Image (cartoon, rainbow, N blue to C red; front, side, top):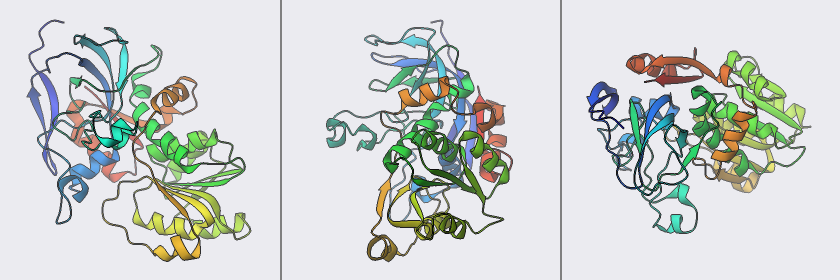
Length: 356
């Protein structure tokens, strides 16, 4: 590859301190891959990091997770322009994606095949070892989990593989049975992906809940049977009425709002399955008696997208996700500030992507 001395990159220096800078193009070492970035999404976690959420910057109870200065961006697709020695299964010119975590391969979780819970937890865009893709180029380190995309998949679809993979894992954690009443709370990009994935599991009734009518319309395009607008109806009362007072069988929380957790605990039936996906801006307090003594719920977390990228790629290839309705804004890298504002406001956008 010809010498590429510098590139434009968004660099996170601290909360609300993200700057467009010139950075050197990463050099490729053994086992590494260099992508020319074609598209990169702004995730809700990126927005929360930007806004200074304690999960990323630490507080009295936790250390900072974000290792600034760092280039953000973990939802990305790009063209392979350089391959390090020993790389197999990839070729120059391939369009590729990479799982958001680069596992260490040696901790207890990695040794047991549970790599998505890797103790080192190197996720692109937050850790110094795994610089992100809000830049002209991104380096995929040795040990990264990389996948080649079909050549006819658009960059917009390619950058949706990561969030869709997370959605699929949440649905797998839910253990949906044929005929179940399933509620997905929150119709952002992740919630919409959950609706599309849950549709494939054969629910008896698939309900989407959100406070934005425009997003609920897209949820119906993703396969929801029913949408409940929180500004218009009492969602808990509606679901109870639909189920003879029992409640839904499965509730998946994807809104990031603490109120949605309480809503789910009141909406779900006894012995139901509650899946918590969201990264919360602040701690959430609930009545744990409902979980135990009142309903004996099966509460499951959901983290990242283990073993889900091939399924996500296939769903996108088959057109089972309305990419053109989910990706509402495509902006140049220099318009990062505008993109971040759109994500933080949330009323005019669903998925915002940047094009370096």
